[in-house]
Amino acid sequence: QKEVEQDPGPLSVPEGAIVSLNCTYSNSAFQYFMWYRQYSRKGPELLMYTYSSGNKEDGRFTAQVDKSSKYISLFIRDSQPSDSATYLCAPAESSASKIIFGSGTRLSIRP
Amino acid sequence: GAVVSQHPSRVICKSGTSVKIECRSLDFQATTMFWYRQFPKQSLMLMATSNEGSKATYEQGVEKDKFLINHASLTLSTLTVTSAHPEDSSFYICSARGIAYEQYFGPGTRLTVT
Image (cartoon, rainbow over all chains, first blue to last red):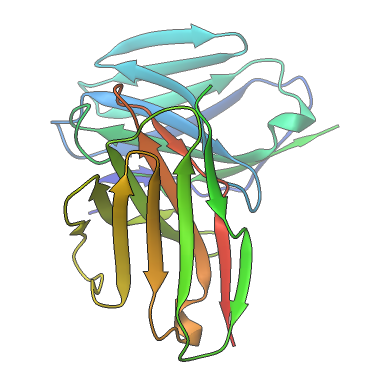
């Protein structure tokens, strides 16, 4: 079993829709949860991070962590064509430990 | 925000030659840098962790004699792919971590070995 499981997609939604991206993980020691966005042929960029369980909102993006079910979500409101990219969930055990990346979900927002 | 650069962005080399890729943190000091490899439509695979002034720590299955990593300063780490072969063709990405835990990624280097 992989430490982090993520549906590879592709996921295609119309502009303006709410997008839900999800990951599950198996390591109960994960405490930090990050989401990265990667455009084609570019390096990933950090979108959001949360510590332990709970929600965090930043503009149109909301990150949600449920440690009891080992489930991580990223919601995008009012999706835009510029949001079309691959989204990687990336948990870590501590601030000093390595990050484990999910396989990424390819998202396409149709104009 | 923190900026990490990589050079070159793209390189084509012949089989059997060596290629060096540079990773620089431009506006912060990075005690730790990471090197990843990414194949098409796949996620990032950590190759090694590089700490300034000490030997790199390689992930299982990564040949340290083939992928030489040097982290001689707080702003520069290099990855040298020695005796490159076509199967080494990939997208190589570095990241740098400063005093906080976030990793900032470089734009990547696309290596093609012919």
